[in-house]
Image 1 (cartoon, each protein chain N blue to C red):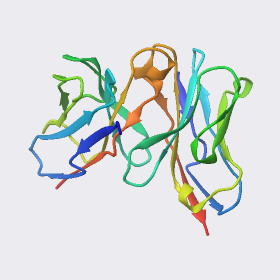
Image 2: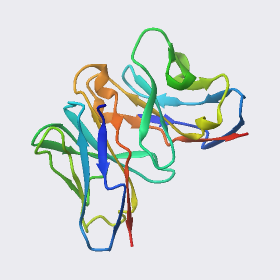
Image 3: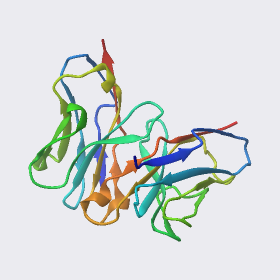
Image 4: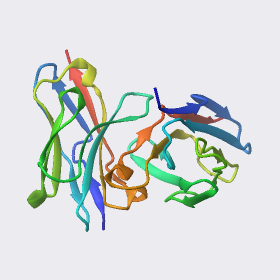
Length: 115
Length: 114
C-alpha cells in the first residue's frame, strides 16, 4: 500500500546538535510538506515543496532546513538555531493540481525531544 | 484575516451518544473544507472533505459534515459514538490552487465514556 514513512518515530537530541528527520513517500505525489505540532497550537507549516530541487518556507521556517533531491524524499533538518525544537513533526504529501491538491496524506510523525 | 475556529477544546460524550464538533471559518475565497482525525502519537487521517455540490458530505467511520455557507460553518457529526472515536479532530480550510495555504483549526479533543 502507498503511504508516507517517517523515521525515526522518537528522537532525542542534546542542545546544540543538528538532527535530520526522514520522510519518504511512494504515492507519486509531487508536493510534500513539513508541519510542526505543539499541544494546543494546531499544525504550523515549516516548509513545502512542489517539485524536485525546489522548496519554499512556510510560517515557521527559522531554524529548519530541507532538501528535495528526489520526488520521494523530503528530509527535514532541525538545526541548533531552532530555539525550541521539542515538538511532534508531521510530514505530508499531496498532488499539485485540482481540488485534490488540498488533500494531504500524513505520515505517522516523529517526536523530537531536546534534553 | 483567514482563520478557522473550533470553539470546543475538549468534549466528553458517552458511548452511543450523538456527537457534533463545531468548525467556523473566515475565508475570502470559496472554501474547500476538511475534517481530519488524529489518534494519540499518530499522524492525521482524512475523515471527509467538501469541494462543491451537495452540502452534506459523508466520510469514513460513519462521520458526516454539513457545509452552511450562511453560517460559515462545517460541523462534524456522528449519530452514535464508539469508544474508538476518542481522538483529536481538526478542521481545515483551503481553496483552489492554494494547497500550501491550508488554514487549520486548533483541534477538538474527544473523550468517550464507556
